[in-house]
Length: 215
Image (cartoon, rainbow, N blue to C red):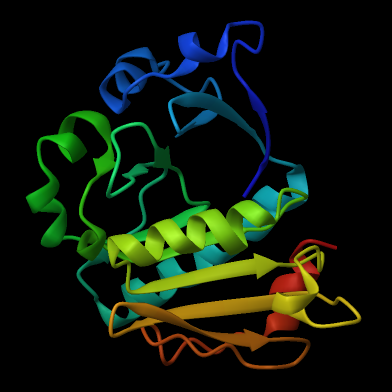
């Protein structure tokens, strides 16, 4: 998840609480930044250059695998995932892989607003950790689990997460969460570990190869 700042910080709290529909109507066209909606508050995402390098590298590697296997999947340049139990939150993963067939069930929200409302459409969500690591290990993990997103990667290339997630002493870690009976199981990968993805079992990529991109 990116570093972030709230939009219109001088407004009174009650004036910030907007719905997803209002947020989508407000969302600027073109490449004018990336925004999420958190409990009715618009949050501007502020990525670092290395953050973008890591996310771009992963999208490229996964894209090659999708093409090699001719899978019915695609990686959107940008898209929102609506929270399951509220109309006041929507999230932008750093990388997400969508199912070509399932995305049809999200029309017209996807077709008109690039917004996913059903977790089964998202085959994989990836978040690259920045200083606000709690968003990825707590908030996003809980929301994606409730939505039923099958697979979720947390790319902590700087080793910023809590010790209960990445160990003590802290070190760069990749956590891959896989949905089993509606709950995520988490497996951690470090240094020369080859990551294990249920969605892409033939992806031959070590944790260190990913970390080196962000150095």
